Structure formats: structure tokens, C-alpha cells
Image (cartoon, rainbow, N blue to C red; front, side):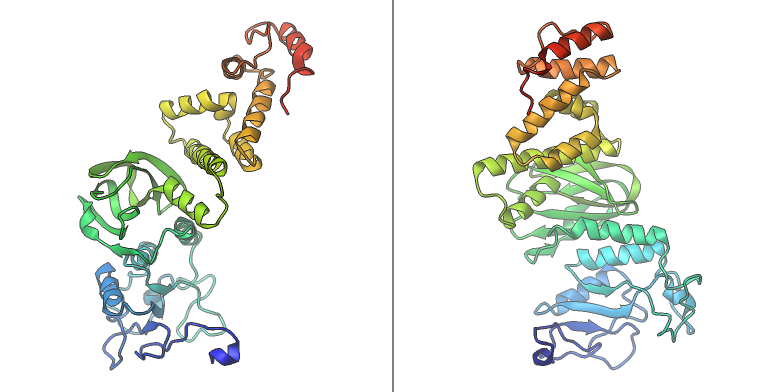
Length: 372
């Protein structure tokens, strides 16, 4: 088949184990004389998925049964747990499969044309995911898309303390990912981690949004989350930097410096946009970017447009010069103080002076001030 198709595919056959197959494919109804199958209408839980992953470590594994929304509520026969694939069950199943080490799964829709076990209709109770479930699947995809799941990682749930949760950890202990259920706090064991890492959390029930949880060193730490939910946690900045380095875009100390600065500002902009910023973080942004740090959209635009540190600083000078004409006295003052600290503030300018006086000063120096 591979010769016919022209390039190697992972070929398999559901429920049969064979050394020539590229993956182990599990049937999902139990009680049959098959080589590979889950419990009835399974998998039942994370532990079953982990058991299947551990049993065959020489090749990928996949559950080929269709785990569509509320499938078992519409099943014609008896089902041990009809609610297993409700919204909570679907969301947790895709996270369990990942946190067990990367089990494949089927989370799409039944086709109306291949609808033997209906009623999987657009307006029916089964099969078609509601918008809220599509949202959390997108969150799952966004969390894992930048290479967080690595072949060197393995499950070690003993590193989760005081909550129902799961952990994937790299062999070198440089990379930890946690997933916890129904928790507003969790204690994690980071012993053996060689360097401190900034940690972010993502509420897996919501649109994808990273929330800063500070920088943690090796040891045992309790992380307080903002509300009870199912949370994923990871070291965001370092992982993003590793991904960018692997892409080959970091070729010098200069590009490394700009990458670190750009990612830091992007992370801070994300925190600001979710109203999770502390007064200390807001003060850091104002100190380094002036009035720009009070406007998330402007900060994001500048970091996306700049190609290096020097260009980014020129953008900041230009924008803060513009903010000295803002209607808000506080905005004008922040912009002026930032420029003054860098020796770029116009002589004679007073952010609290009358409008005409401020404009006269700005117009007199505008042509001579190099802000390009």
C-alpha cells in the first residue's frame, strides 16, 4: 500500500496486533476475542489509557472508536455509563490521552451519510459538538501545538500533590506539564529541575489564555489558581524559546536578546489582556515602555512589527512622543517621564501645562527630534 500511495503512511487495522502494522489500534467495545480492545465503551479513565500506553511502547497507539459528543446516550444497546462522553467526559478524555503519553483518538463527527448508529444529526442530541466543546478542543490544540509534548517525556503523577492530577516530565527534568481537575490550587514537586522557570496556567474549560504564575525553582511549590476548574500548567517562556531556537531563527546573541525581549513583552501583553496583571507587573511595563505599556493592542502591534531591539526602541520613542499629546494628563506624564529618563524629552515641555503651550513646545522640536 505504501508503494502505491507513494510515501510512508502509518497503516494499521483496528483491534488486531501485528508487527507489520505502523500503530496499535484499539477497538472500544470489550468482551471480544480481539488482540487490542478497551473495556466496554471505554476507555473508562486515565488509568486504562496509561495501561494501554505502557503495554505497547514500541509504536504509536490509537483508540479508533468514535468518541463523539454524547454518543452513548443514543446507543441502541445497554451502556454502563451513558454520560461518559458528555462535555466534561469529552474534554477530559482528550487531556487524559495526551497526559498518558500521547494516545491517539477520534473526536470528530459522524457523517450524515454514514449514520448507521444515529441519530447523529445537526439538531439532534448526539454527535455534533456544541460550541462550548469546540472551544475547549481549540484550547487543547493551542496548548500543545508548539511542541510541548515530547518523546522524551513520561508520566509521573506522584509529582502532583493535593489534587486529582497528572504530570508529564522530561527525562532531563527541564520540562514539566501538569493537568489537574476541579482544583483551585495544586502542589507540584519540581525537585531535580536544573533551572528556574516561569510558569503559566491555562483554564482548559475556557478560550485559550495563559496566566502568569511567577517563576519557580526546584522544590515543592503550591500554586494558587484563580478559580476551581480543570487547569493545565507549564513553563511557557522557556518552552517558546526552545521552539524558536529549534526552528533556526536564533543565529546570534543579538537575535537571542531580541527573542527574549519580544517573548517577554508578548507574555506580559497576554496577562494584561486577561486582567490578571498585578500592580508590580504594570509598573514594570510602564518603566520599560512608557505609556505604551498601558495599551495592550499597541504593545502587541509594536512587538509584532519590530525586527530587532533597536527598531523596537525607536517605535517606543515615536509612540510615547505621540502620547504627549494625549487628552489624559496621566498618559502625557507617563510618556514624558519615560522619554525624560532617556534624555529624549523636549526642553520646556510640561505635561500639565495648557494645551496651546504644550503644542507650541512639541511643534518647535518635532522636526529636529529623530524618532525614525
